[in-house]
Image (cartoon, rainbow, N blue to C red; front, top):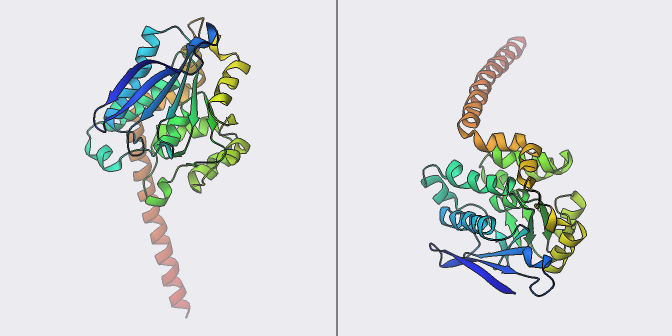
Length: 274
């Protein structure tokens, strides 16, 4: 593979390396850009990691011919283990200034994007994979899972909406309300990924679906903006999402108080009959 450029991830001593996995296989094949991120120990989505990944996408868009962007991990066990929750909670504006920015960049990127899931993708890592256009998963190693239910962290609108948009209702339920762990073959059966395999299968998918020329007319990103307008609205209206959640919580509190009064009246009536 020929190295095109490298973006450092200062906080972990890691990097994102852009290579061409099909160098020497013809002029058209030169336009596959493989971004391999290695940010020990498990590719957490931190501000510095996100800044580096967004910069890599910017470099490809503005300095290289249109083609296809593929992301994968240089860490065998993990594609990405999601957020560093302590850092996310202590970084002001982390969601709308970093995480939503990353999701939005992939959702609207003006070239096809393919996620090569070499290992585990949990929580935010799974979400990042879903914000790609296509996904290929290792058939023998690694799980996809949204496990926030297990440690009591509710999903916000942009975290939830991408699954709602791209998955069947049954799979969406199993992902969110069961925290189900999907291995490669189960992911394929559930429609989460497009194929199982490695880089050869990625190149095969790009070839078979003729993805290398899809961005040529310059409207690929526009088509995705229209296609995923509901998800995009959620990414762009962080304040609105929070206001909606506050209204829901207020309504829920009123209903719970009313329900509790009804229960107490029922219990009083039951005791009076004894």
